[in-house]
Image (cartoon, rainbow, N blue to C red; front, side):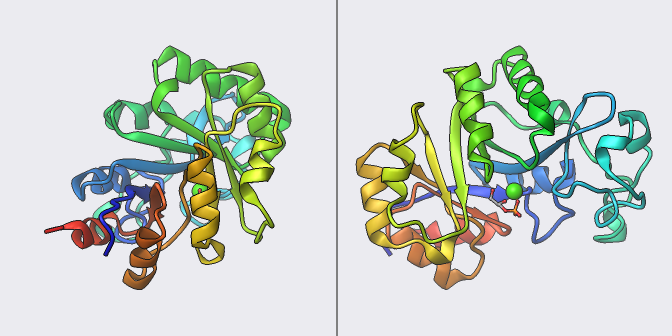
Amino acid sequence: MSNNKPMIIAHRGAKGMAPENTLGAFQLGLDQGCEGIELDIHLTADGEIVVCHDLTLDRTTNGKGRIVEKKLSEIKTLDAGSWFGDEYKGETIPTLNEVMDLVPDWIMINVEIKYAYEGQIEHKLLDLLKQRSRLNNVVISSFDHKCVRRIKLLEPEAKIGLLYQSNLLDPTAYARSFDVDVYSLHPYYQLLDAEDVQKATESGLYVYPYTANAESDLLRLTQIGVSGIITDYPGRLGALYQGR
Ligand code: G3P
Ligand code: CA
């Protein structure tokens, strides 16, 4: 194994061992030594930012329907933990504000914008991050590259990341073609090679592939020099670094 120790980033919290995107999953990630937390956000009907992967409540709660059609008070009555296991009964969908109460500010938070809600989420997110003095250690990523570009234009201090699943010919050239500064690349881990990583890091871009869980993949990504690894099993990655 190389001496590189990529940042351990807990995907939706320690998603492999706790109900994703809940405070319990984030706490478990912290307990397992993660240095970063990845999470997904949506807007409620009353304009609150909540942490959930899907547009709808159906898969991860005992509720139904679109998040954007529900008020926060209604969402807060739902159980977001029981589907994973009885020990997590009573977990709720957290607001991003609640996550920031839990997660110390030296832990990087990677906020993924799943949907821009006609640009509303960008303003709400920036207001919240400024109010909480978190701009410095939050990376805002999205598959919607126009959205993260708008974020950077609105707030030059914001750190933006490009998520992508295709095998881009030259991801660094693509990121550098933006008229704003891009902070990081977030490629699908299976399509990432050493040349892409070298070019990106030499250009000053951080590289955070998602979502690698098998030991062989964690080792390969470490060897090719990525900056961090988004994983459902932060403890597994930490164990690989033990004794090095
Ligand atoms: O941010 C990396 C990764 O979380 C993107 O995919 O579907 O898990 O949100 P998904
Ligand atoms: Ca995500």
